[in-house]
Image (tube, rainbow, N blue to C red; front, side, top):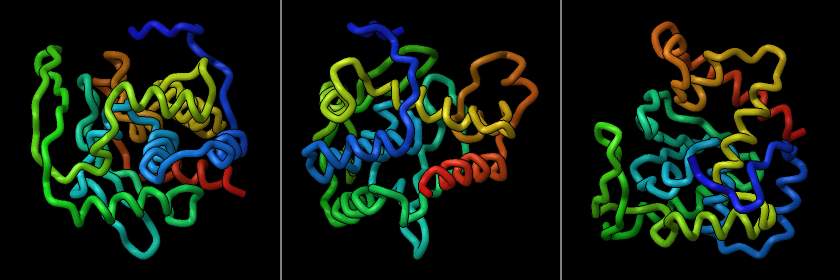
Length: 207
């Protein structure tokens, strides 16, 4: 487990609070896009900065992100559909479009096989070519403050979804891919319908 200098942060930030912090912070387009992707999708920091252009689809209404099988034995869930009108999604679209026009180049990534972490160098059209672990930490601290860390956005997202009175373990798993307990792993699948409910709940926060 990561060791946090200021301890694990448990107080959840509302959408309006996070939005204002992003607005008040000077970030590059790439940094803002990375932060917003991490905030909305609740994925691990590497699951965001290791995305390639082909993982994204843009249609008339949504930005669709395929995270594939989540790391550390997580489930494979349906791609997450982010409405284009949500705050900051236009920034992600901008960096994705640029990535789709770039030539492939090399970047180090880490994969888990049999619970072992292996470093690989892959050539692809990386959406966040200049962001790795250290930079991810810098971005989150720059926006939220020195007490915060990338994984806080994962906690924040899943806690907010879980605060919906109609939320279920199936919905949380369908959104996050987490298989945190043996019973959950054996008896629950993933559901596109439940993932959509999670996104609908997030959509209500925008108004």
